[in-house]
Length: 437
Ligand code: G3I
Image 1 (cartoon, rainbow, N blue to C red):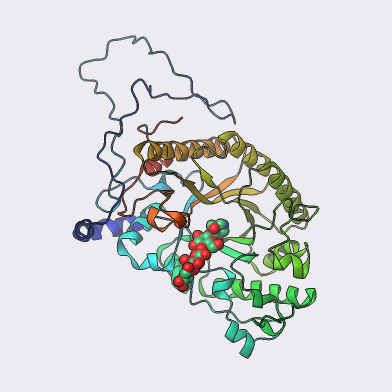
Image 2: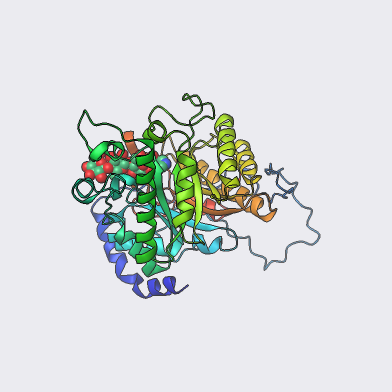
């Protein structure tokens, strides 16, 4: 891949930068490798029954038909998982999954000014998502709306995401457009007459809000597709509209959704109608949500997407996949993917991260196993035709930048702050040094 060749030519200079970073006392969770698999943990090569989660059975030691010849060397199994992604040539994540699905990462605009991170991003990811910069509260320009907008047509400003779109176009990386219609990170004034942010502001009518929605979606798609053609391959058209028990018979989110309160439940279908109207033909339209493995939520999502599917306006379901070490069970995770796949829609894991309670070696290794088992499952579902998984996006690059770090670090991602790999990285690569269970 040309990207990686370019990088090799520039590699040596950065190690000096990294040494300087280390001397600054930055902490990572790099540990010298005595990550030996526990005593007696045989390396199992599980047999795959079509579509079933593998519960590998310890295999009896095979009776060697012939004594190993003295020249046979015990296969080296990795024991050190904390390796600099800057200094060392590592297997590429996206190249390892070329035959399965693209591998993405959520980023902030500032991370693209860090040359060390840019090298790692170009090596391992062929898809990118703006963590915030393409959300309504970043694109809507209130001053512009008040001065130059009309009641039906808001004014947008793309300075927050221009650089990220340009980076993708310059480096042949595709982008997931996140997100067009969401109850969160969308300013209240966007729903008010005159775009007023005063306490006595009056909500606009359903008709006006639908016109604003259509003009918002139209402007986002026209701007991005005109200035960065071919970059966006998927849109999160509507995000997190389902919340069973919130007061809607079909399990839709009501209480904190100004879209629902202003337009009614049909705002979702209208969003997809407008998205299909203005999207490029090859851009895929997704419904995206979290905790999709909860039965009531899963059922409500399926009911919603099937309605939109009948109108020809949706291509996929995004399972955000913000998970823990043991919740949800892999069974529930797999069941959800299979049931979503029964709709015939694409499936994407759009925001994968694994929330840890500690950075102990044991927890970090369990995290590696978690990532390994999920990707093992996804490959199996794809190989058996059970689900058309087309992308997995990790919701962040380095542990220190995760959205989860609200009350302390949660270590959910693939790289440490020093851009060292973690067991999670090697788990995705199905490395034998990471236990599968
Ligand atoms: O940019 C401002 C900064 O100017 C200000 O000083 C600072 C003060 O707190 O806030 C900054 O904005 C923060 C923004 O991230 C950018 O860092 C917001 O407070 C903070 O709430 C926002 O969090 C984002 C969160 O969505 C908001 O819901 C996370 O970065 C982002 O990763 C997260 O992503 C969401 C997905 O879009 C949808 N699925 C769930 C996922 C996690 O919540």
